[in-house]
Image (cartoon, rainbow, N blue to C red; front, side):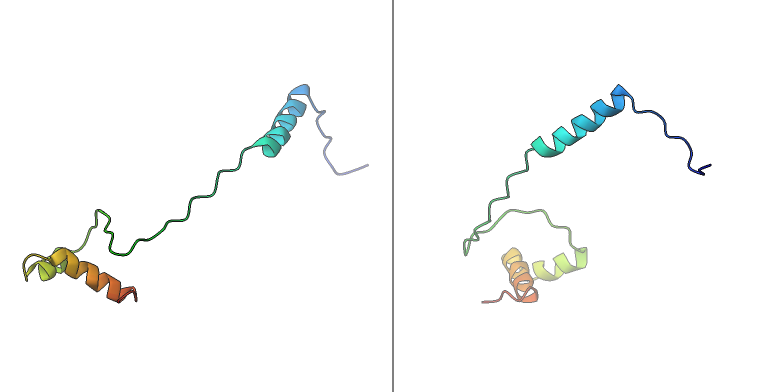
Length: 82
């Protein structure tokens, strides 16, 4: 005598579910690859950025141009300085 429990008989519903899954996996459209982003020098992009208040105050201390100063600091930190 075997210790394996008896298997339940396959039903029409089981076969339909398996067939649908097999069909779906073969016919599913794969997403198109994302287009490569071209970076243009000197082009700025508007973003929202959360930074600490004291960091913002530091860059705003010298008046207008604080966004350019933050950008320059980020470029330097990322190793992108010209």
